[in-house]
Figure 1 (cartoon, rainbow, N blue to C red):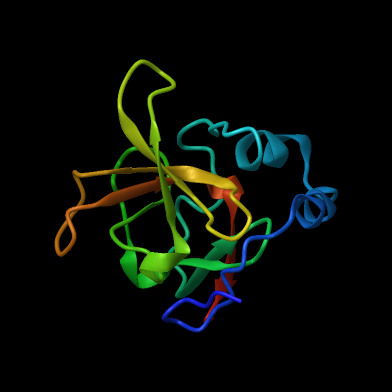
Figure 2 (tube, one colour):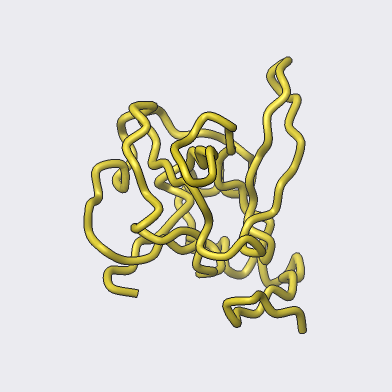
Length: 141
């Protein structure tokens, strides 16, 4: 078993476990999480959420981002300047649209979460631009 510094199990799920968890996803959730799609800007349910808590992976429930790291980037997607734990994000170079960007995925279930850009606020200068549909918010977590 592989654990993060925050104490969470990061052991990758098997394909069978992923498919079992994905059985309850809506077609739109499947399209974003499993097929690396993107929801339309300014329509995600978590964009304007200002409650204190933690944003978890919709598929496997791994904590991804704390509300204390959330900021309004004006892009239309929930944005964060740092992850809950640096090991809770997996980075993939993405050149799919003829440009170079960094895709962020869940390290446990490999679900697509969004992208990270080097134009965020201090202290990290990073902007994790995420799909609301890829996450579940847990208040006070």
